[in-house]
Each structure stands twice: as C-alpha cells, then as structure tokens.
Length: 214
Image 1 (cartoon, rainbow, N blue to C red):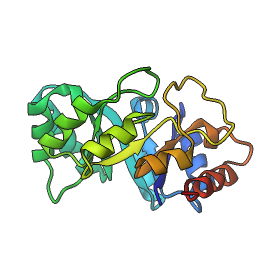
Image 2 (spheres, helix red, strand yellow):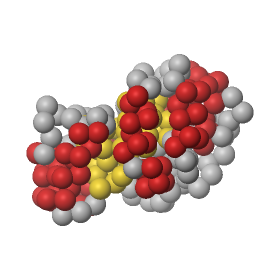
Image 3 (cartoon, helix red, strand yellow):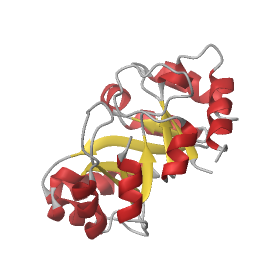
Image 4 (tube, rainbow, N blue to C red):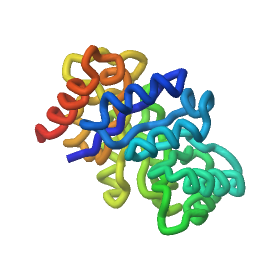
C-alpha cells in the first residue's frame, strides 16, 4: 500500500508540532514545505525528527549544479528522508544533486508539473529525472499512469490527493487515494483534508483505508 505523507503547511512551529503529535499514531512521514521552512528553517525538520518521524523536505530546488548539490548535502545533514528538486533544473543539476549523496540519502524526487496546473503529464521531465539517477518524481493526475508506464523504476509521490467527495480547493490535478494507488503512486501527499479536519487522525485513517481499496 502507498505510504501517506501529511503536509505541515502551517505558519508556526508550534502549530506544526501540535499536528505531528495529533497524527503520529497514524502517520510517520511529514512534509516540510516552503511556508514552514521559510519561517522556521531547520528547526522544523528537527521538530519532526525529534518525534521519531521522517521528513519529506519539499523545497523544490531549482538552481545551478553546484548549488543544487550543496542543498542535497545540507538536507542529508539535517536527516531528511526525501528532498525535491525541479526536474526543469536540467540534466546537469539533477546529476550533480544525485551525485552529492552519500549512501543514497536523502531520496531525491524530481518535480515535473505542479498539481495546480492543468495539462501535460510531465513525461519529458520524468525522463530527465530517470536519466540523472533520481529515485522518483512528483506526478499528479493523469501524469501518474504515463510516468509509471514509461519509467517503472521511478517511484512516484502524488500530491493533490482528495478523499471521495472532498473539495479540490486550488488543486486542478486531483485523484482519490484509491485512484492514485491504482495508477501507480507509491506515496500520497495530503494536506488540508487531514490538517483542517475536525478529527485529523480519523481523517488520516480514512485516507489510508481508501488507499487500500485496490
């Protein structure tokens, strides 16, 4: 079954910590993205790690090869399990990032198309990620099927997950948990449907249960 990642898209460390404490019996993998990391920096990663959970550091690195490699080494020093880099950075930056790791950590995920954008499936950028030796890609909507078919070795993290009947919010490329797993997703990223629920732990459990219906 695909592993659930909950996005800690909060403006303060205290609110993010409360959510991890609420969910950690159901969830052990959390996304630290731009909002939380820009405000709290490495303390956000440390907070999750101190609670015995893994960190998906979603900073979408998009820079020259030397800078991308340095970012990967810094993420490794923080103990992050995963890090995102824009596949549009180009082959050399992706190869430099992949080559900067020791013992394969952190796992590197190429960002293809954002889930708020219509059209396309990200296959060309997924090809770059594959050639550069990344572990997987971020793919949503119809992109999951095409990427998995073309590059079965690549693992897929799928954002924009919404439970059946849920509001799409600002996401255009949405899938239910079951749809995403059937399409080939290995990890599911969920934010607001869990973190804004009246009972976040129950919401997370429901999404995991839906994802198992394949």
